[in-house]
Image (cartoon, rainbow, N blue to C red; front, top):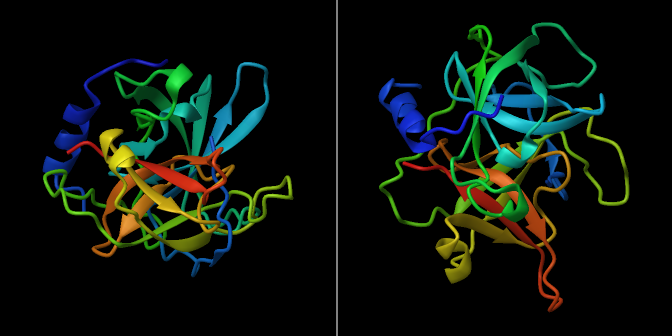
Length: 233
């Protein structure tokens, strides 16, 4: 199912088409229902029969973007969802093919942690389901005011996903190592954790700049670092 391809070429084609391992939202708040109509809850059907969850976001009627480490035997995407147990208007669509970044390596999942999912049937756009545009990859300036969202855990001590879509504001840091690894980074307790991987980093212009990838606690005892894979331009 995992077909390696030129991910950047696919993304570029989506942009030109005019498309309008960790992760909990810690210290965030509930999003206004359906204020982020591009948000996707991704159900991962694993080889052992278990189900895991990641986030994602809708690029157009055919493609969803997520993190490459959200790999699974097969997938189902939930579109138009806000409250987990409410099904009114929610679309459930299986994934036909998965396209992880060609240079993604599971043994080093901090690099190139990005994947496209081709839906088995087209998403139906509505007030609750709309795509998000991608940021121009040619702009090297660091956006400052950004946000993340997802259904991941809201507290590091609990074991359950959030029943509603949560969101939080994050401020990106100008970090040489992050830039070298083609990442955006933020620091501090506020940020993603388990369950939010694959969701979008959305900045002040309303476009997606990155994909939620990881959270690290430095051995030096410094602040927690959250990493977001830059979307190839």
